[in-house]
Image 1 (cartoon, rainbow, N blue to C red):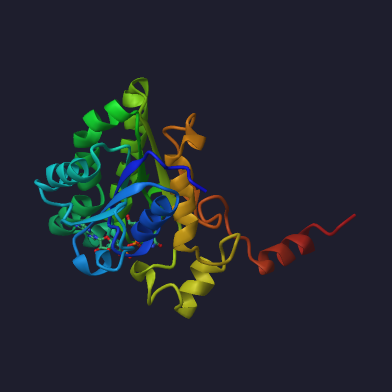
Image 2 (image 1 turned 90 degrees about the horizontal axis):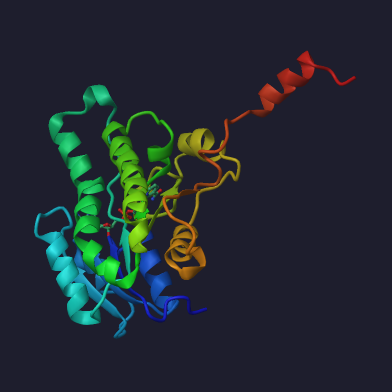
Length: 262
Ligand SMILES: NC(=O)c1ccc[n+]([C@@H]2O[C@H](COP(=O)([O-])OP(=O)(O)OC[C@H]3O[C@@H](n4cnc5c(N)ncnc54)[C@H](O)[C@@H]3O)[C@@H](O)[C@H]2O)c1
């Protein structure tokens, strides 16, 4: 499969987890990929190939967008795809959210995507390129705790829809993927805890956590020309987490008792 022979992509947070899976998938399908991460450790283990370049950069800094765009243009000469993937989970409920926590959460989970998307526009206009933002199921539906994270991820969805409307006439598409619970270092320690499994994982229609490849495949589709008529969309890749209300077997039994057949 080679859907990206002429593509030059930027993936942020590409050192591990979902971002790495996306970078590897785009690369496997023929793209040139600039992999950005604040830590050099994961970047150092990416495939050694001329089509993969790495940049150690903290995307939260004011200089980051310029540094990332300059690096991509220096090595590839153009930018056709931007994947805004950096994000940091876990946050307390609203009544425990200090201004510092709010600034941190919005500063990592929203502002870097906002700035980089804004500053890459001239290149995307030239290339008629596209952006895929990584949101979250927690930006789509309500969730306990995670107040500022929810707000930031809902902001990512708003940014996606705004940009699709504003820049569609320039030939730029902007979509988002909202992952559910995915097996990455970020969810390690929590996703296998018995109570978490019983109350969150096993209550989803598909009943298991997702893999990085599930997100990477969806991002690759959205970034490819196969999705050329799709923009402003948020695709939940979440095992059905945001699409249904959990009904336990006990509820079904109670229902059947109250409404016997015939
Ligand atoms: N894993 C999940 O279940 C899940 C669910 C919903 C949404 N998401 C979203 O998916 C994205 C990736 O999540 P993940 O689970 O792969 O995370 P992860 O923590 O496993 O990996 C994130 C990567 O981003 C890098 N990074 C963090 N802050 C950075 C910064 N300031 N500058 C540059 N790089 C930085 C880290 O070094 C790391 O390599 C995030 O936006 C996250 O919110 C994840």
